[in-house]
Length: 420
Image (cartoon, rainbow, N blue to C red):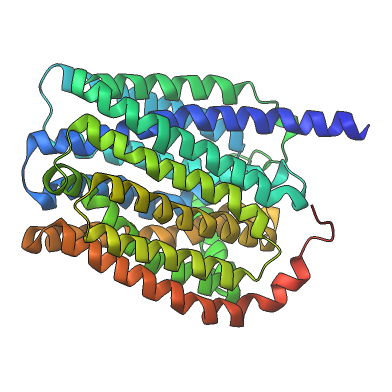
């Protein structure tokens, strides 16, 4: 019976991993192609980094409603429908690009629509995972999920995306549309009974539904804010995201202008980023028995130091090596802090509270991109990356005493009783 149960629970998890891998290949292709396309439409650094703003800003508007929907409706159906929606948007964008009718407005609108759908999908998908796995396996399965995302988004996707864009600018968006359609088909075959998910909500009027949505969102945010450990973690992660997205939003400028890379070369530069992320997802579960504050604070400090050294380097090989350290530290933080908060949040509010956490995190993305655009316009990409590295290092060091104070007791209480 135990074997059958485990096998049955593994099937939906396997489908989730496969679908996530496919969509993240498409995401990696698109996320390389979008800034490259922007560089063909404008030379203004602020407008190029505006693509990152357009990609992250909708998360501020849709993450919280997405979390409420994930606790109220069938999480599987939410993802399937929005995967089909994203496929349609990607097809439309590919059509504009192939017809040579693309403008910055069209590029921004398509990015915003797909990002809005992704925010809701992320809320529903993250809420699914803890109900699929044994609690003692949470770090390991989060590591697998993160590794799947990295292989697709940062290893396979960027390399393919740079090559496809160099061949035909519209091709990356066509492949992206195919990835969403394939994901929708895979998730649709997932048996709803194999996952604990919210029961369908009874039909109500628009006004009543809006009121209920607001109450649900407010409850999730209030629950998060009453937890000192989660509140401290959320605020630290928000500050880190400002620095991270400042760096990410200018990498295409740094790679093409300072390092002299082509479109395909920029895609290849993402390979060490993916390798570092995979190392981080492999290392993180093996560090789960160590004090959380010391591990994640140290990991972020390593990331910050690597960023500072990137800003001072002219060698593609050195930058590639440092990117391994950069993303390795980020993923250690991500896997361990996500597992920590998933254990604290009850299933019935996991969608709302998780969305509240990611909402605060997403506040940092547009802020970081806006700052990076202005700073790069004034002084170039290198000073922007250097400032991001200094900020990240300071936050990593600051996180150690802050998280030690807030997480130590809960960490002991939640520590798994079995050891691998």
